[in-house]
Image 1 (cartoon, rainbow, N blue to C red):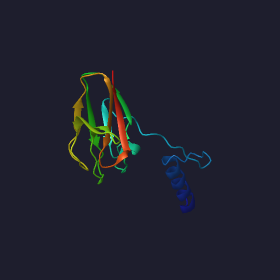
Image 2 (image 1 turned 180 degrees about the vertical axis):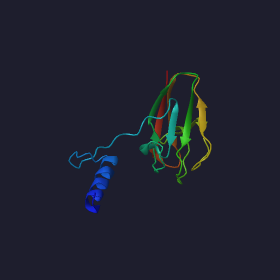
Image 3 (image 1 turned 45 degrees about the horizontal axis):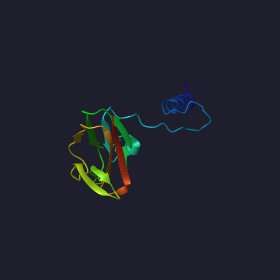
Image 4 (image 1 turned 135 degrees about the horizontal axis):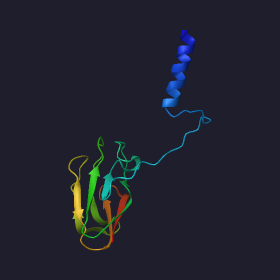
Length: 136
């Protein structure tokens, strides 16, 4: 095997490993996998908890059953401060739950005893960072 054919084989292997299987040069976006049940990611939400900073929760709407605990996980590698506060940006906190503001650190949990719809937001980012928990 000469150097030129060896380099061609390496280039083809690299292309296939990166998803370039000759599909006309186009790539498609695939959404991040859903988080584990009863989990919401904070801050890296749009990228599925991979360290890309965002002002979002992922998923935006989570459903659970009365008596279950929701866990909010701060995405690793982020530097923006976020919190999780029940209520809405327009109406303010409603006092049901509130986490400390942090850029990383311990998870925040809340057990939902009663069925209903619970709105929450980040008080730092307001209407840019909201979510809903539906409890059946």
